[in-house]
Length: 255
Ligand SMILES: NC(=O)c1ccc[n+]([C@@H]2O[C@H](COP(=O)([O-])OP(=O)(O)OC[C@H]3O[C@@H](n4cnc5c(N)ncnc54)[C@H](OP(=O)(O)O)[C@@H]3O)[C@@H](O)[C@H]2O)c1
Image 1: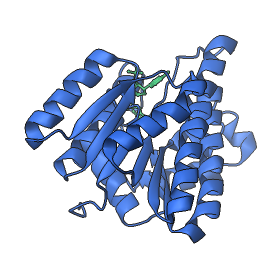
Image 2: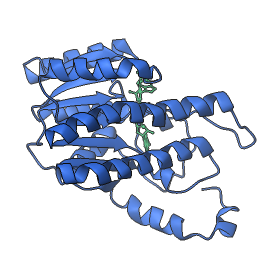
Image 3: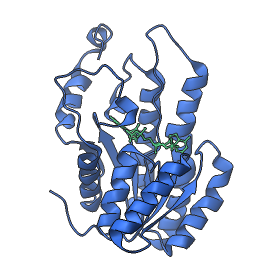
Image 4: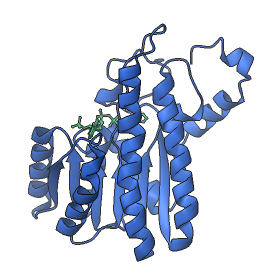
């Protein structure tokens, strides 16, 4: 169940051009927030902003084209977004990539790109928000991590590692900022029907949820000031079981 209205008026979403980021933008705009949409695909951002503005009947969204690997751009872009929004009370870092990795492949270029997008970009964007929110004594930070960060699984070592690093960074931000009135949510989705996993051979027994369902659960968790939220919540139990598997057995399992 969603908590409406959401408590945010001015939001930045990094990685807003598709999937979970787009669904978060749609939910927030429908809830009355103004949103800065950030990603590389300008055509998708432009179409999304136009659609959000049309549905809201007001200028609810604008977009900024940006590649998170260009970290030198981020301080100025952050200021531009906050200024055009006329305030900021929420930032979501949803940008992420998951290049396919064969069982005998160790693709360093893809791995380093994954580190840059999934982790370094998050640090560069969320550090900006941390400074602003700490000074203001208020604000919400949402990092879109993954269940993949809970354990080093054989399928995609560096994707898992970037999510584990993101979890640790977000926990540390939370420990710094909670005393300043700032909420930091680590969102850990399981399988969400987006381009990221479209061609992955996943176990059919575990359902994939639509991005809109994931977005609603993420925003509900943040509005409730949760620290960590599995999306949907039953992934907590799956990951608890996976976490309990002893290492010698885990080495033999393709999970
Ligand atoms: N789908 C799942 O099952 C699942 C599960 C757990 C966690 N997640 C996480 O959820 C987040 C969103 O992924 P998604 O599933 O919604 O997939 P998606 O539809 O592929 O969205 C990925 C987003 O990241 C942006 N992005 C990628 N590289 C970027 C770059 N260099 N600079 C700026 N933006 C960049 C993309 O925008 P552009 O390409 O336009 O730049 C897009 O907006 C990711 O962090 C992913 O790891 C997804």
